[in-house]
Structure formats: structure tokens, C-alpha cells
Image (cartoon, rainbow, N blue to C red; front, side, top):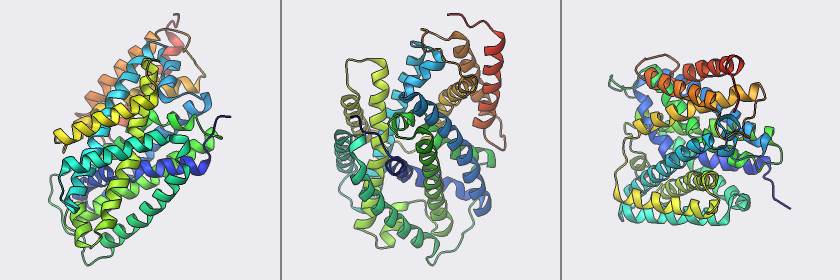
Length: 388
């Protein structure tokens, strides 16, 4: 009998996704807004992003389909392949970025070479993939408990140390840009959440648990990064760990938070690849992605990911908007090759997102793009011919 994940297992998966060095580093950018505005933008952005994350997870969980299989319900069997390809590309990118960030931070604590730490993290990710998502329950519970305790220690060092909120120079993020950066992380997980909720015993409860758990933990990571810049006077989390004497504990935070997060990227890249071809198993493809990401992290610097985040938003924000619109009217076009009307609406949403990048809107550009695309998709489905 096929094993179904329970609420605790789903919660642990998304706790692991949230505990991330990349999210802590992203949080450091918010310090230029000051404490109050930084907290507000983090909360608003995650509310928007995690709402979209919930819809994406529930659509797939209810249909018992993987994330990229659900796109075929809105774009057709062949139309959905485009988004599967885009998802594989973004997940390869994330795998390399996460391994690079983890290796960079680990090397700052114990200087043995970035390439060596990238190799260690990559091998652990491959181990996680080989164990498999439905067999990680006890391992994830132990790992998450340890990470939880260690991040509490990190919070104590940052917020209850001897430092005080230091003024940050002007010229950082605007309020709207900060909201968008807070939306970006949950949005990046949106094309893969139902790879996990489809395995859940209770899809609605599992999706809600996953979205809320990730949202809370991700906010926490952003706040740690923001607090490091404001209270500790540095954006280098590794330096804070070293100063606090965390040593081995800090190293464990870096390595295992990177593994538990990046495992999801590589594993889901494999699941998405199954939508493109049945010749390769998802697990085998996931291992291949982990290898590619490890090699990329060893060879290339990946310090500025802003444009990468905007790429993710512009592709996947209008995609989920159309899927939400179809979910609301109970439409399913998975029996077609292409759903041309929705593909044209997606192209409009993509162009709109790129235009909104030039506009400093207080709620960022994902929210208005999603709202307008949903409305256009509903009108288009009502008024335009839908024949195959």
C-alpha cells in the first residue's frame, strides 16, 4: 500500500524548506527600511506569497497530481510542458545557488575551501534523495529539532546580545520592492508544493499546515537576517556565529539547513522532469540535478540573485493566477494538447509583470499581476471560444 504523508511529516518538510541560509541572507537587505517597516514588508509579502502557495498546493493535493501535472489542467498536455521545463530550469538554478550559499557560509566558519563544502552538501542532498520523501519522517524530525534549537540560539545572540539597532544608510529597498522580495521566496516554492501535498493523507489540512509552517519559519529567517544587519552590524551570518562561539553548532545550522531546503529543489526538479519524459525516473533526475548544482556551485560565484527572483516571479505568478481562476470555475483542459486562450493570457500576465517591475507599487508587483491576470483569465474563459 502506498505510504501517505501525515500532517507532522508535511510540516517537517516545509519547516526544512524555510530554515535556509539564502532566506537569512535575503533578510539582511530589509535593514535599510528600519525595524518597523522591515517587519511590515516581511509580513505582507509572506501573506501574499503563502496564500498563492496554499492554492498551488491544494489544487495538486486535491487532484492527486504533481505540481507540473496540475499545470496541464489549465494549459493542456503539451502546453503544460513549457512550465515543467521552466520549473526544471529554476530548480537547477536554486539547487546551485543554495549549495553555493551554504558552502560559502560553512567555509567562513571552517576554512577548508568552498569547493569542498559544496561537495559535502551535494553528497548529503543526494543521500536525502535516495532515502526518498516518504521515508524521511524520523530523520527530518531529528534534523528539524536540532535546527530549531540552533536557530533559537542564533536569535538569542542577535537580538539579546550587547548590540543595539544601528542606523542603516539610505538608498536600500523601497517599501514595494521589499514586499516583492518577501513574496519571492514562497512564490519560488509554488511550482513544486503539490509534489508533496499529492502524497498527503488529508490534502486540505496538509496544504494549510505546509503553507503556514513555511510562512512562519520563512518570516523568522528573514527577521534573523534583518536583525543581524540592524543589531549585530553585519550581514555576514557566519561571522556572527563565529563571534558567538557557536563553532560546530553554527556549522551544523549552515550545512543541514542547506541540505533540507535544497533537497526539495533537486527532488522536485526530478518530479517535473517526469512530466517531460517517462524515460528517466524522478529520483534519478533529482540526483542528476544535485550533481549539476554542486558542480555549478564549485565553479561559479552566485552572490546576486535579484534578477533570478524576478525571472521566477514573471513566469510563475501569472501561471498560478490562471490555475486559480480555473480552479474557481472548476475548469479542466488536461484532455487537450494546448489551451491557447490560457497560454495567451499567461503571456499577457508575463508582460504585465515585467512592466510592473518598473513601477514602485506599495504591495510589490506580484499582487497586482496576480489580481489582473485572474480577472482577465475569468473574462477570457467566459467570452472567448474554448474549442480544441
